Amino acid sequence: MNTSLKHSHATFTIPGTVSSLLFERKYAPEQMITLAANVFRSMLLSSAKVKGKEFQPGIMATLHKSGNGLNFNPHVHLVGTMEVVDIKTGEVFENIYMPYKKIRHVWKKAFLNHLVKKQMISEEERTKLDEKYKNGFHVYFQSITGNENNVLFRTAEYIATGYFHNSQVTAVDHEKKTITFKYKNWVDRNSREKHFAIKKMDIYSFMARMLYFLPDKHRKMIRYYGIYAHGIEEKLRLIDKKTWAKGIEHSFQTNPEVCPDCLTFMVKDTVYSFLADIEIKKLVKTHGIINGYFKPYRRQEKPP
Image 1 (cartoon, rainbow, N blue to C red):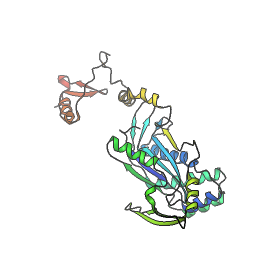
Image 2: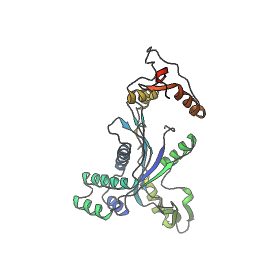
Image 3: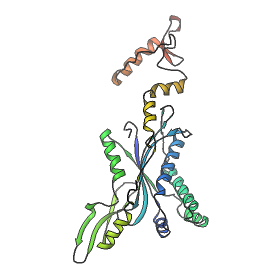
Image 4: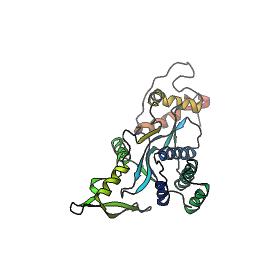
């Protein structure tokens, strides 16, 4: 994972009515992972105003088949970069703005089209669902901030956390064979405040649900896409060696590592960030940018 890039945690959800329908029709919700990743990528590329397969974010995504109330509620947890990388040159394109409201409608359209293609719903049912949910299907975003360790920890927390935790259990009645637990009922969209409810369940029903929602044996539930996809590491490592040089060459059609006058490789030096402003002011007084390079002014070229 590249902790120098900005990351966000996105949760792609579907309405309860749709979940119930898909449960009855034995839909395999693992298909939602790639679908959500494609929507996330397409929105990033649109926002960054770039097109093409070479432009890729880094995405890690997984599926939870249930909410922590142990009801069938498939949703995708996705952690992705908020920048796009050109995997041919190593250039990084910042995402200026993510249209959060629009992505709900894009996700709804993509998911309903997917269900029609998989013959889970009819064209008529798609039209009805499209009209019923005029605000789209909810997609929740949360920025992942902090130092490198915090980013790695929070990413692992979002991706690896299961659908149920022991701390939810509030009581177990061995005589009546029941279990009582609390679960997150809903989250206020504006304040992000979590609201909880209590549920009592027959212990055998509880165990049956826990087993039902567990992933099948040996099935890998975390998928990687873009610059985090398996097999791309070596390619990116080669790009990283000359990322800055290739990026400048691609943008200005000149190699910044070679002197344009004598065609020899230039010596690399570093100016620490807190001195950069002072050094730049000095440089501007004596040099001008000519064909992408700082070159000393000749006497007749010096600014007044």
